[in-house]
Image 1: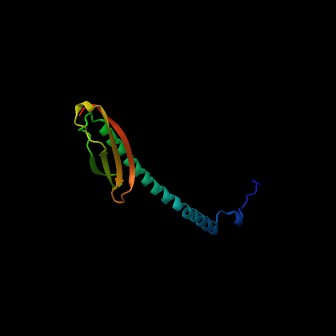
Image 2: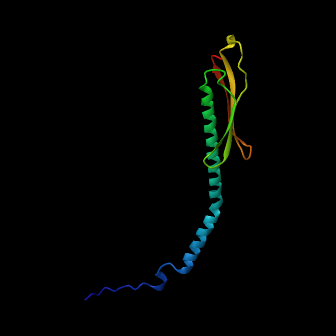
Image 3: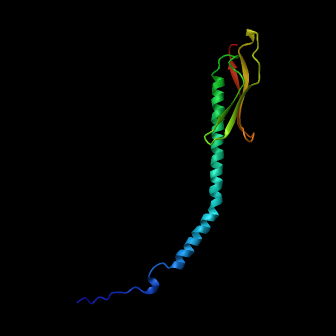
Length: 138
C-alpha cells in the first residue's frame, strides 16, 4: 500500500530542554541588570529636562509680559511661585534695574529687565534672561 517510511523523530531532536531555557533566562536576566542603570539615568534626565523646559517657558512668559507694558510705571518688579507638573515649586523673579525718570523730556528710554527662575527647594537657578524694554512714556 503505502511504501513510504515514516520517520520517527529522534530524542535529541525533540526541542528545547529545561537546561537551554534556564540558560537563556539567566542570560536575559544579566542583560536586564546591565541595562537598568541606563533606564534609571534616562528617567532622571527626562525629569530634569522637563523642569528646565518649564522654567524656560516661565521666563519667556514673563519677558512677554514685560514687553507688553507700554509705560515705565507698568514695569515693576515681581516675585511669585509656581508648582510645575511634577510638584516642584519654582520661584519666578522679575527685576527692574532702572528707575523711571521724572522729567517727561527724558523719554523715550530703555529699561533693563531681568527674569530668573529658581528651584525653591534647592535654590538652584534653572533659567534666566535679561533684556532692554523700550518705553515711550512715563
